[in-house]
Length: 188
Image (tube, rainbow, N blue to C red; front, side, top):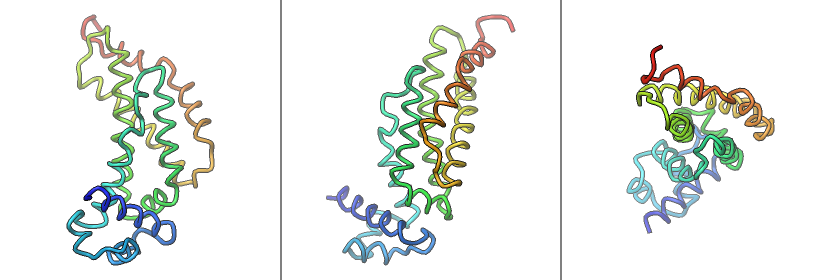
């Protein structure tokens, strides 16, 4: 029952965010739209920011799925673009509000999970420190999320497949080269 109520509150927030800026939406607006009282909202969430965070966490589960390999990372990143596009009004509202950090956190987490899988796969036969692998994944994470946030900022007009295709061409072979640089089993 708790998950059903949370999903209903989330649906109400998304519906309202399509009509007005997130910063103008109140808990009362959400509860009236959802048909529950304020105590019900506060039983599940501390505030609207907490609800936004829950939406991104719960909906991101499986956004990338099994696309965490070198051969499939493009599908995983495309899936993140598609999630954002499918939730365009809500994501845009969050992007242009004080809740933006929740959107960025979601994107950084999802993208890092995708990239660390790719880095670990490419490093399987190499001796590379975990912190160096995380550094490489972080480097690409910031580049990827920066591109995605710019896409959101400019109205999501460009085809996500074209963006991911250009990224694929740009980084082809670069993760392997970066790992070679950080190898600890050979002299530098």
